[in-house]
Length: 379
Image (tube, rainbow, N blue to C red; front, side, top):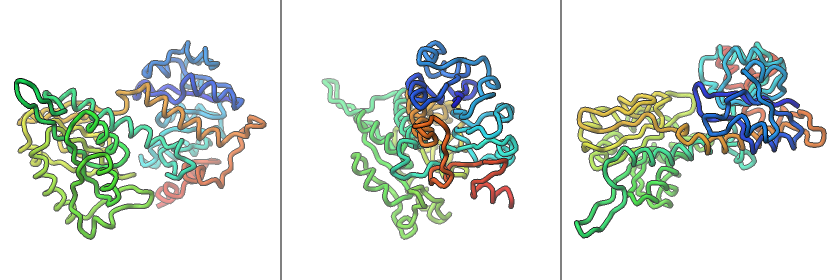
């Protein structure tokens, strides 16, 4: 069983395997081939991979040519997919909601593609949940980046020269990233408030020592989609929530937005008009900026300073903690791959009726087989 690890360093500093997981794959009977430089962005040299038992290949095409399993952080390019042998298993964060023709490339190449972000949120799959592992780190990093951009201290300090008040931090979206942001901000001594459209979030927010803020009407009480995700709210509710948030923002020093809806552009939570009354020196971190952004005026990879002196950070992401993110992502992938292998024979033995497989499998046998995307392509 040959396992290929691709480099994402042109677009991503993370890597899909680490020396730790290379050793684990060898215990499964796998022979690992790593594309040269794949781990450099995360602090893993080619020599470290070789010491762990992997071989290093000069380019992507060579890496995948004979691979039974191909591991990547993001979806490989069309050229790399076509270089895979028919029947190869390709596992990555696939972003399957991108145009359907990109799925068609994988189908026509004859590979069996698996999207890790579609992993069902069930107990058996917790160790494979890449969304949670990466969002945890993104939430943590957002507070660190915000505190670095903020020109005042976060905790309350009582000094001989007077008392320094604690910073006010507002977290919008109390999913995995938001909850970690709350916990990190609280550890740093800030006064934290948070909002979310899911009623269940109240208890989670308050358990971390933050105050929950939301328009809690009848629509709010029914605002949770299947799998625990937030669903899109009506225009009327959005208007009421925006009014509440706008007033609250005036008193905030740091705001962190994390709201995402699977398969949709990120909703705008903060408009330019809502930013205008904020104090100069305030900081907003938009963790959804690469999906369109929650903050009007945010730019991916940049720090924007508004006319009234508010900094909008679009450059805070999990890539800024690439080493830790790679360790967790690589373990997520290993946990999934280990379910695909018969550990007695070291051969692939995929149970295509397994819920984990059916939920994540995009293409197989030259077809787009995932019902959500096959139906969309047909329509």
